[in-house]
Image (cartoon, rainbow, N blue to C red; front, top):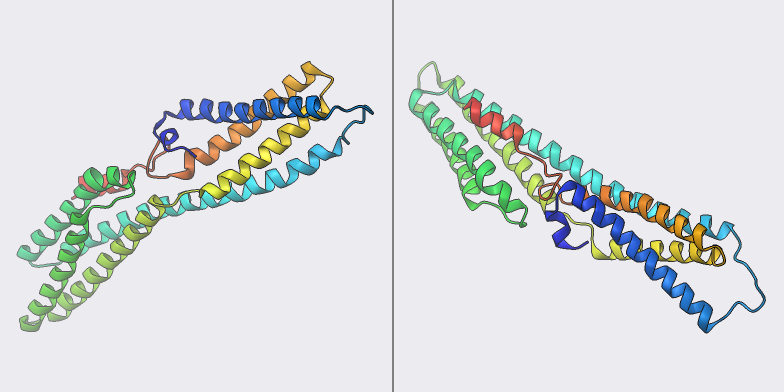
Amino acid sequence: MFDFMYELQDWSLFIVCILLVCLVSTLAAASMALLRLVWPNRHKASMVNTMLSGILLPTGLVIAFVASDVWQQESKGRTAVEQEAIAVADILGIAQHLPAELREQVVGLTNDYVRDIVEQEWPLMALGQASQRAESLLDALEQTAIQVDVMAETAGPERIGLRQAAKDLRWYTRQAESARNQRLLVANSRVVMTKWSAVMVLLLVAACVICELHANQRRAMVVALALFSLGFGATLYLIASYDRPFSGATIIEPKSMTLMLMRG
């Protein structure tokens, strides 16, 4: 679809999708009218009514496959955000068991990371980009885990606890990094133009069949095309609104990450 559509408000996107199918229906009506002029139906033969159901079946299947892919990606995006927030919460929990100096360092790095994700990376994801600072902050957290390991070497009875804390800090930092990578992958996922083209061609063919079936019934043809545009326009709206989970009207908000920022 066109990039400008993803910047529209929810209701505007809905109207645009319906108008898009209306445009396809109008093109079909004009094409069939031209065909009747160029190649008249001299024998008054009519198209078999089952032709429409035969066309709508593959159209519905293709749209269903496209929608399924889109909604799976959107679900992956939400899951990644939740997993990232949980990993951040675990890092903050581990920090409470570290010596004061390292505790402040881990909490500071984690809060900076969450703040950068919410304020900088979220808007960048709409452009297909990522924050380099967030990457460096995760690296800094892993370096802090190494510092905890080094401290454990010279510690007394606390040695075992510090080693476990270092291990857990490294583990949850990598969990946060993995969830972030999944989130960025979803942010860059798109319905490819070949799929949109196939959907549009099938809709055009279905609209052409409707026009041919109602060639001598103008009112029935207009009503059928209007209902066709409304129904499939609403379907395209559902696909388009979830096609880019981190941009547009149905954006996945960083609510769980913001909660972690407040907690820190």
